Image 1: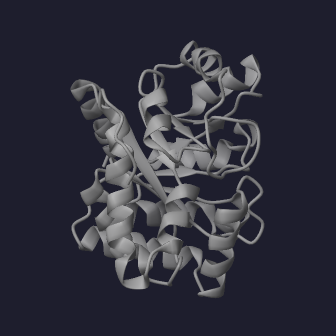
Image 2 (image 1 turned 135 degrees about the vertical axis):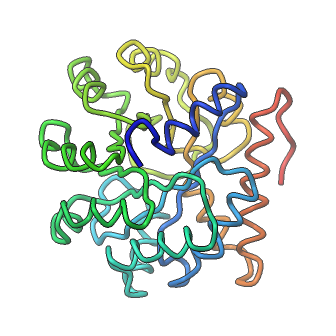
Length: 275
């Protein structure tokens, strides 16, 4: 697949053509059980997910709050490695899942695996993009070049604290979409989104035409409705993992599907009531 055929770009183009906000669920591979993702991802797609963010567990996930830290700990205890994550993506593709996959992983495990080997494997198993939250743009030359040559999207994160210089640096290097962090802090479900989001997202829109995805704190249809006029997609992680963790083991996939469908009520003109 070439850059011009990016599955991520095609997905956002289709969303824009339909005037629709996308929902991108996050799952930690290997949580709650080693192979849970194989059942959960198809359920999320049935619920209306436009793409899936697949977390590669790491022992020191600095950008993540308690929920994803716990999920990473469990996944590592379940023996999940970078190679296993790649194999999981391949098995999902073999099962017919065709929405974009984006790996979210910290830099050290990828460096240990080998950046060139990792990007080559992403191509082989059908992973479309990579988010590396602890990789600053000015230190991303090697991975950026490898992704660009392989037709994969290297997706950068920006936050309300990002300077104008940082936003411009990211805009030059990014492809696929920009991940906009809604707040200053770590991942985790919140009751409400920050009131200054329009100002922050306006600064981002001023430097790029790429689609924007809003993450951190998204947990209710009201949040989705609030984001509808501001961004192209929302990312939901901790709230989804919490919902999966509290479901009976045999009902986890159904609970995940219902949760995404509930969030999607926020993409309509009238926000839905409860799940």
